[in-house]
Length: 436
Image (cartoon, rainbow, N blue to C red; front, side):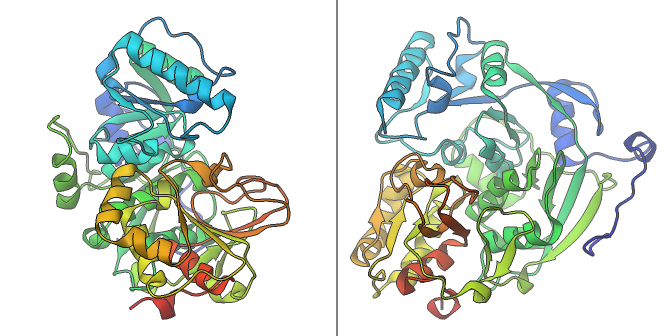
């Protein structure tokens, strides 16, 4: 097992290594979807099980008039990035989406309202993402569905339009790095901290796949797995997938009656590298401004950094579990004067569940602003754009310059609990003292 940082994995040609080797999860899914065995370096032409279009696809500068849809039952349309519309252009995109849905009889449509949500959250909630399936969307965080044992990847709008019209797409098959998870997360650490550990210790995974499994999998709820899979995009990974287990099967069966075929890696699957992560050793971490890869630090190293805005939300950290951890920190406390705290549930379903549990009341009593479900502040589209010179800590997906608004803003990243503790103190803070 190559577990030490800097250790060079076996660099033999894939074709040399794979003569008698088994397949990884991604290789097995792509083989099934294409009908031809694949190995790293191959171009895999595959059938698409789920194609998700969202409002950015319908912007006037991007949209192309689609004349044919291969299978409307496999198409999902979501209005999420600027919902409600943030400007005239997004309002027109929403209108174009509604016309498209009506023209082709798309049943899986999530407009502004009851079933509103961030597309990647809805893929899980509504059973669109199924184990063993190929899922396509043109948002880079499509890999979120890999938590459900999918081959899920973001592609450009032209590839999305082709997939909607033809029902197929293609991928270059990359090599896979395996992360074996052991131990159990302490009560003060979260999967976002695990991500920061991987990003800080191992850096980018460009053109590679990441696969998660191991004995600790049974300790991780689906929300935690989704956080990790979503953040695979920030490693520049092609696919991020989790092994299936009974927790996943129960989750999916509660959301769809459509049969699915989960895929496990072969016992002799060939990996570029295998790395062990002991969850018991993880502590609160942050990503420093402007980059995620090779840019992690212990929260104590930057504690006390004054903050203008705190944000919890996005496809990575707008889960019910995230809102619960925030409520635990905020209960009986107030957001610091001079600091804004914006919270965006990942879907209206999560919002309603948090409302019934009394969580929303705790957040609002503390002085946080809770928005409707949308991508919003995460991408700097609306609902919390940051200004010149602002210092921010966010539990979302990215922190590069200009991501959340003005390019002079400094954006730190942390777990939702770290962000909540920081909102209370008005400065970056360790969440440990706030969590029982």
